Amino acid sequence: GNSVTQMEGPVTLSEEAFLTINCTYTATGYPSLFWYVQYPGEGLQLLLKATKADDKGSNKGFEATYRKETTSFHLEKGSVQVSDSAVYFCALINNNAGNMLTFGGGTRLMVKP
Amino acid sequence: DAMVIQNPRYQVTQFGKPVTLSCSQTLNHNVMYWYQQKSSQAPKLLFHYYDKDFNNEADTPDNFQSRRPNTSFCFLDIRSPGLGDAAMYLCATSGLRASAYEQYFGPGTRLTVT
Image 1 (tube, chains in turn yellow, red):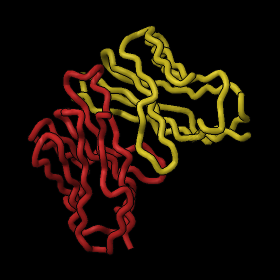
Image 2 (spheres, chains in turn brown, yellow):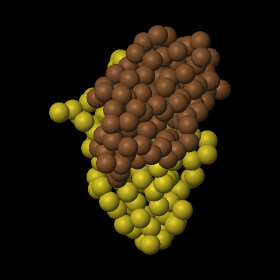
Image 3 (tube, chains in turn cyan, yellow):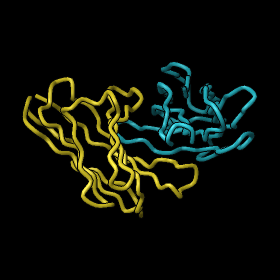
C-alpha cells in the first residue's frame, strides 16, 4: 500500500534559520507528491506539489524536489520567518489507489523571533 | 475567487443532539471529501462523493452520514454526537481534470460536544 513518513516535531528554529523537514514515501507506480500547510485554527493549504521524478515544487520560498531514487520529497526553506510557524503535512496521491490522499503524520514548526 | 466554504467555523452541540455541518464550493469540482482531524494529527477521510456516487470509508462510524444535493453543496450529519466526535471537520474538493488531482480544502469547522 501507500504510506508517507515525515520527521516528528516539533521543530523549533530561530528566525532566518534554514529549514528542512524530511519526507519519504512508499508507493507503487508514479505518485504525485504534495506539501500542505496548516496554520493554527485553519484548514489545509496546498503549499507546493510535484507530479514526476526530478520535478521541483516551489512557493513562498519553500522548495521540495521529487526524488524517485530515494523516494523522498524533503521540504526546505532558506530563511524561515515567525509567520511560517504551522503544521506541515507531506502527502501523496497515487492513481493506483483511487486518487485518495495519503498523509504523513505532520510536523509542527515553531519559529522564534 | 473560487473556493471551498465551510459553515459554521465553530459549532457547539450537546451530547446526543444531531448536528449538521455544511460545505459549499465554487470550483465546480465533481469530487467532494469529508475529513475528521484531531489535535493536528493527519486528517482522516470519512467519505467522498464522485458526483452523486457516495463512497464510505470502511471504518467510518454509522453515526456519520453525508448528503450531496447538488454539485456545489455537501453536508455532514452526525446523528448522535459523542464526546469523542469533538474534532475539526474538513471539507475538500478535487476535479478529475485538475492537475495531479490535488485537493482543495476549506477552512474547517471545529466541533465541540458538551
